[in-house]
Length: 353
Image 1 (cartoon, helix red, strand yellow):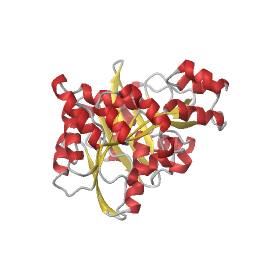
Image 2 (cartoon, helix red, strand yellow):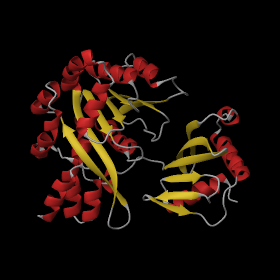
Image 3 (tube, one colour):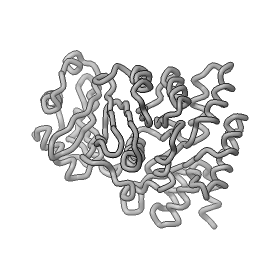
Image 4 (spheres, helix red, strand yellow):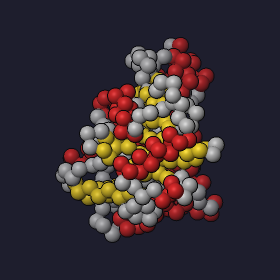
């Protein structure tokens, strides 16, 4: 049986995104959305206990949560290997872990296919920018690329609050303060309130999870800082509705007015399989202009798709429009475009042209 460092080295060799340590199957690596089982030797509960205790040892993390049978989420670095985000949990009476592989250094947006219209959100000086999508679709990677551009292009103080920290940003033109929830600060809400007293220019709030953090984020964006955050939503209109839905009905009109003033951009993304067996990101991109401000304020979110289609010159695009572009560029198949599109019948017609 391999030790944990050998498993991590093998994951890097495979260029894996995730490692699964689960009883009843061999060590499993997730590569470009597909699983690679390492040999035939199945992991047993005793093997898993040894491997996970090795993780706590190499990460120098107190195993009190593990010993108390509490789910644990943390990250650590190993020299010459990379950073790893670990979630330890229990299933069917045994322990298990999923490890996210994060290589040293920051991602290259060109290799990842992140378009300039997304990266240019780094030029925004104040307000709220949201990167949304399902878990594991690359929201943190997109944000890391945008923050890196800010760090290299202008002076300021960037404060990130993450659970846990994934990408490490070095001080460049900006001072970068990175805070990990539960280690450097008790919660997102506490960290966000504190950040406003730390002369911030840019704030990254890892996730807007509930009413309190959403409300605090909107208040922070109104103070004149640039605030980035994420939500698990699949479209621009769903994102705005998700924010509104956490408020009582008698406050929603006021929040629409606030959002129309502070919301500068929403990027929704998903990962789709490519013809060559890999994956690429597909984006829905909205940048707020006068017309979109009015739609948000007057609750005409059903018109956002039309506004994004007509805003192509400003860098806007619907999800279906982006998938169509990927298909016409030969990156994805027609079936993939239909599987991941929003409006199936309309996409069928557009693909037939």
